[in-house]
Image (cartoon, rainbow, N blue to C red; front, side):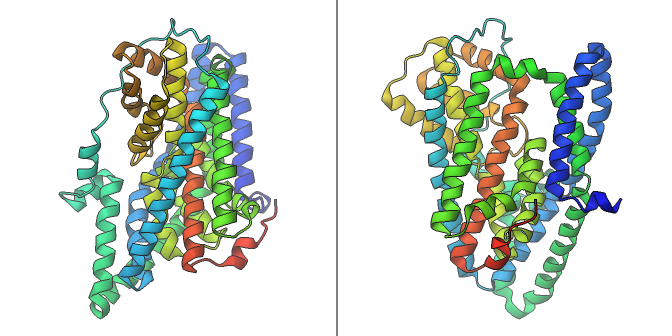
Length: 422
């Protein structure tokens, strides 16, 4: 098996993705639909186990690495500068995601000549009001937040606890060393789990390709093209520009370095599930110090949802075009603003964006019936779009962490500039 482990992880994941897609389509085309679905469901169990293993370590990973990262800073003031810089960059990239999403919706006209008559109305439930989501950042019981996996609350508590250890100075050193050791142990667990990634990706993609089928892409071709084109433009221009111009680092090295995380993000459709891989990738391949990676990346996995913001803008125009709503210039500005606000803190789980769509569509008075029809039309194949949205989110997290690390002098540039063998 030495030859297998000698292959780069991202190459093994890509192989699993390609073989899984081919296997899923072949099964769906060559077997009875009921038998094919039963077989694909059995295979999907492998992918579900992989996702469950990753989700198992997400909360302890965030808690231990965030506390350890803050403790490693040595000065509470440094946390403030890193946090402000990271949050500002996340807002700036979200702004550009809005512009690109609206641009792609205008260019591709995904809703033009689309027949939604066969779509079954679907209501996913009401999204939590922004005020309640902001209040929920402060946990009434931090231990309950850890158990329930409430990431914003976990991050808030971890930040305060890390600052407390810094302020405790000598008395806080034993606990600080404990968290540094624990974070190392959790990262080693991540390495072990990631060896299952090629098999998990194969199973997940085989099920998606086999149950959704090629026809899904053709039915929503323009919408798919708009989302994927917008995602690639945003990653190359905005994130590439962030690394090249603001961080003065080679963008090609950055994209080569984050490919492991991108592959896992594409297959899992979950920023939170990909977080362990993102931390591993950014620290090992990009040379970002753990003090920055451990604080910036968990924050990004929770509030940086550029892919969601871009997607909501495109779907808003899709809805207007499909039902003939007339949009005035101020509507575009309101769509962009609303999409940016509701995307912050979106749950890092598959299809969470659909819960927020109704809020964005209210900007130009879309009826509840039309909103339900659009959601019903998109929901069956949203996984295919969500996969690319997640790649955008994860790449943005890595780009911001790299840029902040360069500004703070917390990056090994020699490690970053290494060109990994392909």
